[in-house]
Amino acid sequence: MSAQESGGVLGWYNGAWQSGIPSFLNRYTGPDSFARVYDQFRVPDGGWTVVSVFSDNALYDFPIVVYASWEIRRGMNPGKGGEVVASGVTAATQTPDPYVAAAKYPASEAAKHFRIQVNNLNVQLPAGHYWLSVTPVGKGISFASATLGANATGLDENGPGMALIDSSDGPRFAIAESTGRAGQLGIAPHYSQGVVIAK
Image (cartoon, rainbow, N blue to C red; front, side, top):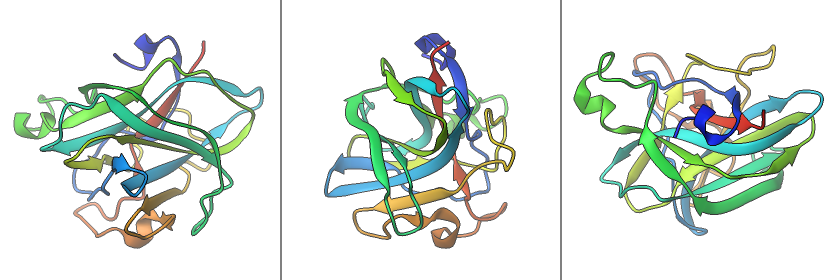
């Protein structure tokens, strides 16, 4: 199910996966065992009703995803988790990443990339800055898709906002760029996550 098929329109998407940027673990097996990425987005004047949230991930030896742990927070800063506005461990769909097609990437690579999406939400967000994390639930390896902003939608005038990472094993709420390793295109500053809003 695509963002548009979920009953809304794409309000914000941080950008599609780009090879050459090492990603960060993004998985959840319980409240004491997780690795999350959070990306910042801005809600404009008038507010949004969020009906779906999603993240793009590369999955390795990971079972079919049927649940995702998701959070929307505000007031986050390096070292501080801020306030949880909405969250859940909720039924999710797993579909091929729409931007990682075999025509552009080797079929073996494209086959690893999926969009994990939570639908049927009704989250009211007034104007302001927020952070989103959508994490597949399961035992296996899942990496959040790193991006430099390709095909991004709904960014504010400053471009992609700050990305933070949080892990039960540490670090806690660290700036993504300060923890990653460099690849061909540098260190992952942002990850492929998005929100679908009511029409």
